[in-house]
Every structure is written in structure tokens, then in C-alpha cells.
Image 1 (spheres, rainbow, N blue to C red):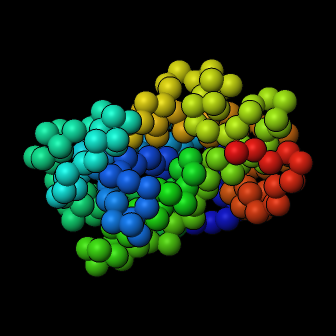
Image 2 (cartoon, helix red, strand yellow; image 1 turned 180 degrees about the vertical axis):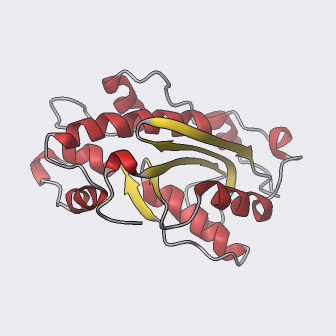
Length: 207
């Protein structure tokens, strides 16, 4: 993707996952994928599916997300879902992936790609949690959890620990953060990349 492309001309794929645990390296897998394709502030398309994890969902995960074994048992497995999701995303030079606490979601997607021996495209990735830590102060929010930011920005959708709801919330938060970025002269994707690489000041760092 052209680094000089304006943010308003960039296609963002805002993704959220529900999983069976905290890390793919500890054996946790994806149970739900939700994503929003947005360009110029307008939602182009949405993606939503359960994923059969082929193993029982831990009780504490069911309590957190409301997703039960019965809800996913007839759903497609990741071998089917991941290629479909990547088709939804488009080519690596056409779209940018966005997630809140992106290392979590991207690690699961990359692990799934490796598991099914599917090449992982070299998508650029933006983490809205990191952006929020750079743009907001402790006087504004006590932390940069998605629920806290949704309340601060008064988003229309609120996070529910369900993939599409959380992806929709993240999309709204992203746009609010982009409005703030404009005050720093950030207009292109290249500007955004440079800004996101800036070190977060220790005295203003947020959780």
C-alpha cells in the first residue's frame, strides 16, 4: 500500500476475535471473528462468523463472552474461515489491519495461518490501544481499555466481548482518534506510521 495515501483514502479492516484463552502459544484458538471494512469514514462491508475450535470452550470464557460449545459446534473450522477472512480483507497493498491491543488478535491470526499452512499477507497493522495511549492523558481516561474509550467517546456501539460488536466499537474509537491526529498534522498513512512509532511518555502512559 502506498505510504503517502491519505487516511481518508485508506481501506481499514478493523478486526476483533474471541478465543478460548489468552495466547495461541498456550494452545488457545479462535472461536469468533468480527471485522469491519471502512474507508473514508464509511463502512463498506462487515464480516462475522463463529469458528468451531474443535475442543471444549472453558467455562470462564463462556461466562465472559456468552459463547457456548453448542453455539460453535456446527460452525466452520479455521481452515475454512481464515482464507475467507483474508479474501474479505483484500491484498496486503490495499488494506490496513486495525485492532485494539493488536498484538493479541494478530498473534492468533498468524498462528492460525501457520497451523493450516496458509501464507500470511504482510499487512500493515495499527493498534488503537497504542494510539489512545499516545493521544489521551490520565486527566481524560484512567486507562485505554476498549470499554473505557467507548464511554469517553460516547460511541454508538459498546463492547460486549463479542467479535463484531467489539470491532464496530473499535471502528468508532479509531475515527475519534483520527480526529485528534489531525491536530498533529497527521493526514496520510505515512504520517500515521511515523506518529505511531513515537515513544509514549512515561509520565502519561496509560494501561
